[in-house]
Length: 570
Picture 1 (cartoon, rainbow, N blue to C red):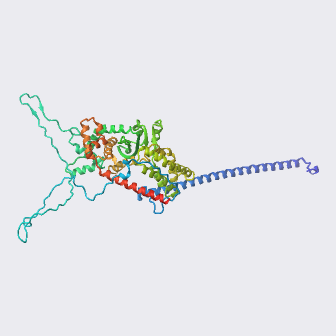
Picture 2 (picture 1 turned 45 degrees about the horizontal axis):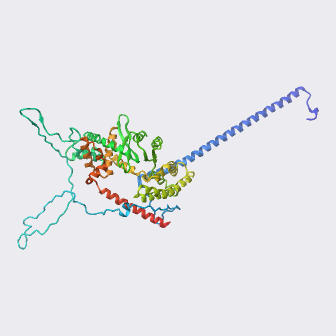
Picture 3 (picture 1 turned 60 degrees about the vertical axis):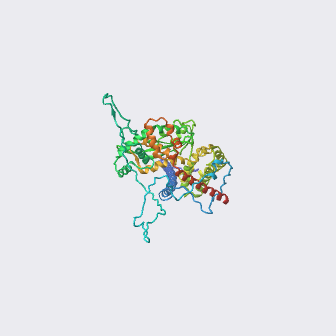
C-alpha cells in the first residue's frame, strides 16, 4: 500500500498481522516442500515402472527366444525319434536349386589314366553262390534192387546219368580237446635225468586255452560285438561251461600280449602328417558309492603312409587325454569343435594345425531348416556345391586336388562367408540358425583350411565311421567292468580296427599274433596289418571291397546326373 493511513498504529494489531503473514509463509513453504516430495516420489515411481517395463520386455523377448529354441529342439527330437537319421535333402522334379546362386566354374583338371573313373571295374552281381571254396560231401542216393528192374521185360535198368542237388548246410562249431602226449626217457643205468619233448606253445603259459579259442573270444567280443555272457551261453551249447571270469582273464592276457604291437601302431600314427580324431562315451563300473562313471574312447587315424587306427581310453573328456596322446604329434589334426582341443592347438606353437569338419557345420543348418527354410537351404546348397567339388576331386592326386579346390571351392566359400556375416545381425541369438552361423563363423579359418592342402579332407567322417564300431559294441556289452578294462579294450579294439581297415580275416590274424608275440617275436613290423595283408593275400576279404566300390560308383553316378540336371535348369 502507498497510503500509510491504512497501516495499523496499534502494536498488538501489527503483531497479529505479522504473525498471520509469517504463518502464511510457513504454510506456503510446507506446501512447496510437500509438492516437491510428491514430484520426487512420482519421478521415482515412473523410473521404477520404466525399469520394470524394460525388464518385462527383456524377459518377454528372452521367453520368445527360449520358446522358439524349445520348439526347434522339440522338432529335432521328434525327427531323431520318429524321422530319418540320414541328413539328406530330396529335391522334387522341377524344383532344383530355387536360389539364385552362381554355380562354380568348372576347371578342367587332368585325371591320371590309371585313376580314371571309366576304368573302374564294377563287379557283376551273381545270383549263384560260389561254392568251390567249401568242402563237399557226396551222398549217393540209389534205388532199391526191385526198382532198378524193368517192369516190362524184367531186365536190369542201365545207369544213364545222374542229377546232382546241392544243399548248403551249416555244421556248428565245436570245442575240441587236443592231447599232446610227450614221452619221457631216462637211462636205467646212469640215472642222469629224464628227457622229454618241450610242451606245445600256448598264448597263456600253463593255461588250457589254445590260440584259436582265445582268438575266437577276442574277435567275437571286439569284432562281432558279442558280450562275454553271450559267449558263455554259446560255449554251453557246445557242451562246456566256461565261466565269464575265466573268459575275462583270457581277454586280459590277450591284451597284454598284443600291447607291443599296439604301442608300435601308436608311434607310427603320431608320425603322420595328417590325423583324424574323435571320441565317444562309454559307461565304466567303478563300484562303491559312485557306482559308475562315464569314460571315453578316442580314435586317432593316420594318413595313407601310416594306415593305422589307434584307440585310446580315458576316464573323462578332459583335455589331458588327447594332450598326452598328441604330445609328439606335428601336423594337421582333423577334429570337431570340442573346446579341449583349443589348448592343444594354442600350446603347440602352430605345429599342430586345426582342420574343422564341414559335416558338423552342415548338420546344424540341416536342423535349422524347418524354422528358416530359405536361409538354411541356401547355405545347404552352397555346402552341397563344396561336396560336389570334392566328389570330382576324389580320384585326383593331392596336387591336382588342391588346384581344383583353389579354383572352385574358394569362390563358393567367399560367397558363403559373406552371406553368413549378413545373416548374423538379423537373427535371434538363441535360434537354431543363429547357433549354426555362430558355430560356423567361429570355426571359419579351420573350415577353409582343407583347401590349402590336397591331403586334407572336407570333413571328419573318417573318424566318425571308425567310432561307429564302438557305438555298435556299446549297445551290446553296455559297459566296461572296471577302470582297468578300458586300456585293455583300447588295445584289442586297435588290433581289430587294423584288421577291418585292411580287410583281413580277423580270426587267423589274431591267432598268429598271439602265437608270435607269446614266443617273443621281435619282428613287429611284419605283424602290422598292412604288412600282414601284403604277405597273406589269401586272407584278405574282398567281398566288402567289391561292395563298397560298387556303392561308391553308383553314388558318383547319381551325383553326376544331379549336376547335369542342375546345369540344364540354370
